[in-house]
Image (cartoon, rainbow, N blue to C red):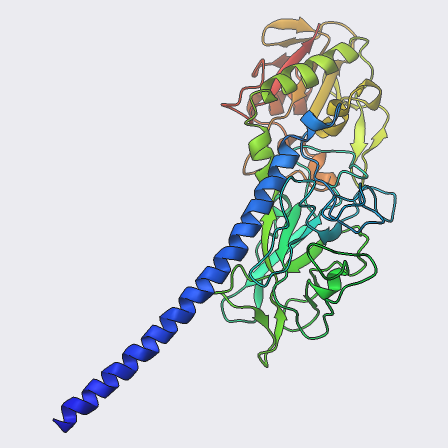
Length: 421
């Protein structure tokens, strides 16, 4: 009987411990769901904004993202939750972090499980205050995002490849860490509370764990050029990022937006094929009827620099559609995807799908898995844009071009040819 009583007591104790653990896990999961739902809703709204940007901004192309809420002195209205109309530094390619502009997105204040409103960072290449020179499916984000390795400390790169870099990040700041002051400031945050200093909400560390230079708060606040490293655990359950002594360094949680998240949706729009076929190819063909020299482009800086004249290859002078023919925002923003060759002789030296032509325009199509279009060298390597017989003809300055006569959503990476008669 004594043994049975002891066993019963052990069983009851184990059940009590198990129930307590399950209760804590359920509470933790419930709290986590509040945050993940808020992050997901904000991310969806931001993607929707970018995918329809050209619908709401006349003459602009899709893909641009709005600025954060940077405070009443810089917002597009004097209301909290409105996107900023400007920020310090009148230049393109400046990244910036601030509060999520929930009002401009048509949302209410979006809060995490700690009751804090969400924050938001946007790459300089994608922000719409000072727009970048290029905006298309090859435009690269400026955030490298790292996640915990599961041990609570060291992190590993989650987006090291050029075209996987995040273009925007939504943050749930979570509870304040030591040194963060979330008291109200002179710039009133009436509905969300607190202040606009990102350093009091988003975390950073430099040396420990082994990955250094994490700047979730983009320390200068007003944007900066270059690529930033951000870090955050994916959920409460995975735990925060801690130092070797167990002190929490980063408890921000995030969702990212990549170029593919935006342009994967944009290319599925019912009007995207017409945008390519009429807005790009037909427009370029009309502007090139006088057969100006192709342009050579240097992509080293924020905006491509044109070097006059193409490269003489075989029977052709090859390059890209020159600046003088870029008469619309669409042509300018997609210039790197528009290749162009003309007959050196000035006559009908080539055929495009059997038709005699003075020149040919090639819309390069979406990247394949083997193609990278980020650096200047990569952008000036034709094999990163063209494939198969079109690549062979372009490289050789050949006189016969055979390829798709129009863009098709079923074959987004196909090279599309337009004859200049």
